Image (cartoon, rainbow, N blue to C red; front, side, top):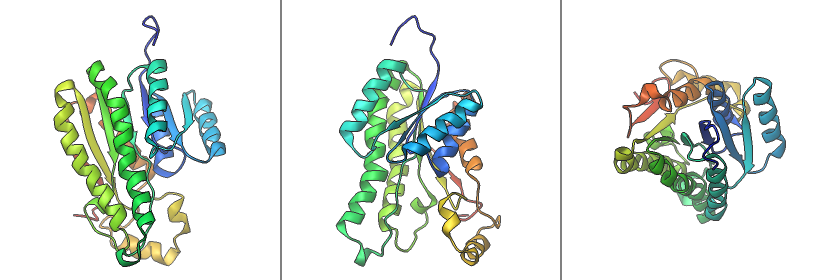
Length: 250
């Protein structure tokens, strides 16, 4: 990186084209960061998001990268670190579900979820942590889930990865705290996204009735917490998991 260049703080968001990921990109852009996001398939959605951010005077860049591919992640990190220097924050948001009850769950369903949710978080975090340590500053955010606290039938694979991300957050916070690198996790509950649009209305009402606040959360409510945790206002917070679920796990 050119030592004479003006350094602009940037944030990496994995899985940034849909749902919470897209909201994270928009929120960090609105907070004044340059945002780099990854995506795996939808080139069109990525291009639309870049243009949408440009329309509000913000700068976002999309990179097609499978976060579960160790070599692809390392290659992306090498290029970004040379071009931009250490990121201010890394948000491990990418994740998938492959639901099935355990006795009917295939090894592929298990492995796919572990690779996409947990291994990806490890690869991405490791690829950028060295630069953050050298910088003596940085924030790592793990997008976990209430499924890491509260079991769901058919989600032993998903719940296992989300619980593991919480444990990873705690241990990594202990390792990196002396370098002024903070590590926290966010565990959303039911959030209104494109995925919930496919749930029948009756089912949505039933699910909402089990939430003390009687509604699903919004992407903005999750993303606002992420930008706060990445800000200097949260400079004394590390090793914590913040549940955003309307009281579901209370």
